[in-house]
Length: 440
Ligand SMILES: Nc1ncnc2c1ncn2[C@@H]1O[C@H](COP(=O)(O)OP(=O)(O)O)[C@@H](O)[C@H]1O
Ligand SMILES: [Mg+2]
Image 1 (cartoon, rainbow, N blue to C red):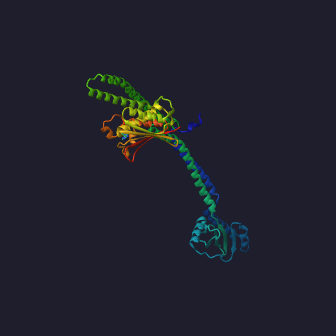
Image 2 (cartoon, helix red, strand yellow):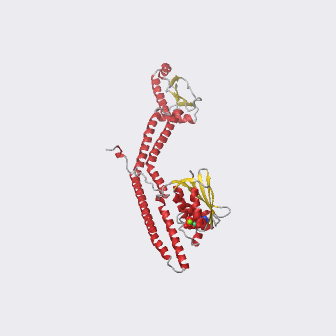
Image 3 (cartoon, rainbow, N blue to C red):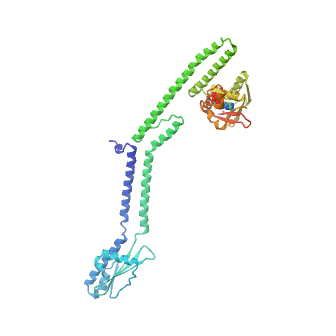
């Protein structure tokens, strides 16, 4: 039999068991403490004992002849209680509340004292205000007086405090221990919450399938759900990529056949449409294939790539300029990097009519900046345009080419190289896009 056999499987049962153990521990602990505090006599008992002693002494003295009574009284005295005999009353009863209360208690304890002439005097100890000096005088049958002097002691403050204090500390200890155990019990739940948060942000997190039975079932369901979502996404992505890829062949044929169209205007429009569709498919494939890009990272000259992009634009008779460093090595995938820079340049040319590239080094960071004089992007949309398939309404209305994947791909590429993409509106108008990469 495993030692954990008795440990319940469900979370509720585990919590209940911990609470039961905590209560039992507290109960046992406080019983022990309570037993200890009973070692100190309480005031009621002391008053009752004084009454008993008074009655006992009375019986002894009544039985003794008058001349022996003083001596007898001395004999039955002890360290705590002093007894004496006198012919005349030894004390005046001040009849205060304290004395009246004590008298009632004397008579309750010893009913034979009812109806007898009993005088009491209770004085608080000046040094120890919780102690009371008690004198009790009882009139004997022949009119002489028996006097008892004793001290009613309270348990010292320290004792009271320490018993209350230890009960408190015990309680705290039990609560702390229970909290610790409960914390451990809920650890899988916390791990699940953290994992769910990460999964919500797009990560794939497997969580340990352990802990209470219900938590384990939850973890299993969570992992299975993630696997299903991941495989579903993969299937969709693969299907989309396959269709995108296969569409390129008929498009290429279409481009070829467009050449046979006699009407020049119609032919050029047809070719432009086919080019646009090809560009869209290319960006879709770049986006979908971005994750598993087989291109290796290597030492690459960022300046050379930027200049190539500018030259390509110039060859297409578009207005792009380059300024800045002649060489700046980075560790990156050159083909991806060229695609990133040309996506940004494309946008600048498209929305601003011209692109001004510059390359600088800020400490350990290489910065490719692309500026244009276009309309810029409303501040509220700066983060939004980085989302896949997100295009601004004005861009849509202008019926421009593109699926809204350009900047998403740029960001994807930069992230894989350890860089960042920064969009800023220029104070003088237009957009400034910075591609920041760790320089070598
Ligand atoms: N240089 C720019 N000037 C103004 N708006 C821009 C610029 N670059 C991008 N945008 C806006 O950001 C949106 C997203 O850009 P992008 O991801 O390249 O997608 P696409 O070019 O396919 O529209 C564009 O639709 C456009 O509205
Ligand atoms: Mg674009």
